[in-house]
Image (cartoon, rainbow over the protein chains, first blue to last red):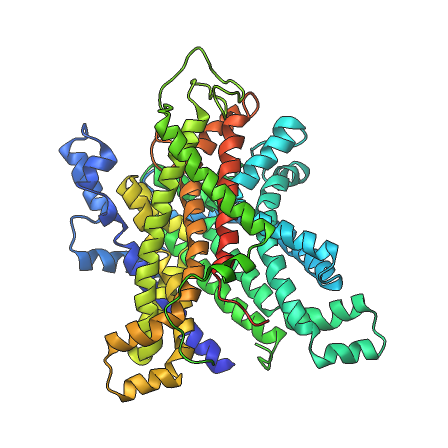
Length: 314
Length: 280
């Protein structure tokens, strides 16, 4: 295990290095003269020269890479064009908000998935199982922006019980903060719950045919108890992997949910950066997102090992 | 293993035997969608023109999906959006399918260095959240159908590659594959004649999932404002535009939403028809 973790860390660092190098070329994606696009036609030659210097366009490819690379190591991820503040500072100030949305959303998804999957497996092939399976299949066909929109239509427009958007910091008013988080968490949770429940149901069914489940039943464990205490843990490897990877991806990528509900997290920051073509900020967000994904995928590996150290039944 | 799989052919009786109610609904819906698109074209319903006599009207015989706050026909716009979604989706899947198939088969068959390189490139692509990188490319490059389709397509290659590689590895140790190799068949021949027929069913089934994913990705992109510019009616764009009219004219949003969800549902369902039969 230690060796596997070691190679994983080395591999992840290599992947991150490649991402950092690739991100350095983002500015090359801009068609034509970058300064023309970013400053418009009316900018003076001096402003253009300044921007070239800020973007590092006056340097050679290698110098630019060296500067960007050295900066990342020193904790200087560049300066946002729009706000003039350090990129790392911008990302760090949005991180708690995104973390809250992601954790609440995933909590909703995990709880729903556990309930649906265990209930389905307990009544396998019964009417309830087939209804739940059908429903989760239907949910797979509903994109998250549609879920968000329908929730707004139902709870904000029609019933008028929840605010359609807006965000109150937790420190300012915890109650209001949680109220504004209900719909974002549900949007993320409902969509993911369908995937999680289907995965978990499949694994649980496979586990139920293991001899130790028969043994547990023979010893007189009630079906529910056997399900929760014996079957769940060995069945949860792919489920935990899925949840962990989704947390990693949503850290830098919950663009849709944060934008529907006007939540000032990293996804919202990314969209603002894209609108303003704020290249340094964008580069920072992509590198941050890659870090989140890579760290989570390593944690997931460790979790999978802890759940099932022998790697049996994989 | 019961011998070497042949190139898949359509067997109608087997096809009909696997038809369930949901699958029938899915096929009927896709046929209906095509008919509706053709109808909106042949009847010359204008997707861009404004009818100021009919602003924000509820669905009726004159306007099947009603009109929006600018008096545009929501039905015509949704059908126009179907063509855009289909173009983006099919182009993206073709890119992912072809590249992923080739890379996956090469990596799975050659193993060694080629495999390591392909796997590493996939790891890099998986490290960045897809929505983030796709919207970055489209926002910086400027939105056009081709840029959107290519961005979505290129970032679907890693998944296709992994699926195809996983399907290739068991085939490489099959006797018919070893026999071809012993007879001196080259890389191209082994891949095209021995491996391809075996991996095609699984990878094709995944292509449907990827198609649904590409349509949703295009919709999401338009929804957060980086898709095709208005007034071009893509599904995501229509849904985003209608969002501000949700209280006064919900049909402007809900009609494209229903069409989008039904289409994704149909693609997901039909995928199961093409999925290789599992022995479970």
